[in-house]
Amino acid sequence: MIAIIDYGMGNIHSVQKALESLGEKTIVAGSPQDLKKCQKAVLPGVGAFDDAMSELNKKHLIPALVDHIKNKKIFLGICLGMQILFEASTEAKVAKGLGLLKGRVVRFQDSHKLKVPHMGWNQLKVKSPCLLLKDIPDGSYVYFCHSYYPQPKDEGMIAATTDYETDFASVVWQDNIYAVQFHPEKSQEVGLKILNNFVKL
Image 1 (cartoon, helix red, strand yellow):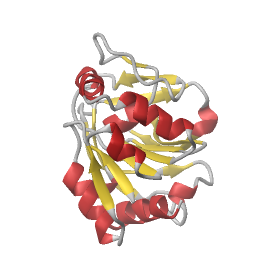
Image 2 (cartoon, rainbow, N blue to C red):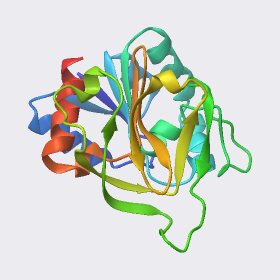
Image 3 (tube, helix red, strand yellow):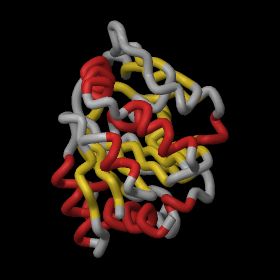
């Protein structure tokens, strides 16, 4: 069973529907007890960094989430759910990240050429043989909606990048942690393939 962590800031039902379309059983996990039942977990996210950390804290989900990862259970972070895995974000006024991945999250530079947020379809440049990207061709299009992106300290964890005036990390992978800056649940056939790869991990 896959836990979809509910802290009030994610595309819970879109992610749940996508995973269940692949034949997976899911649980919407709004408590530590729910999360502990599952061998895999997904942390979706839309919104602000400070708010996300505050809501996770209010629901006492942070220790359970950290334990899930430290116990080598499979984990997938999506969009904001990716960003809060890192140590800090320039978006945050008070909150630190979970620090499970080394690095920080920064905002795209304002430009007359490109709009912020980065919204819509863009391509993946596959960098490493990450199992989450198995059989995903280089150059595949996925759907983004974000103003911030992670800068990992260890570039070796970057499985794919995307070009939006700068090459940013759009997929990272470290041990049992997988995270994507785009929304696989909104990325049609490619997104479903990525989620199916997650299911098979």
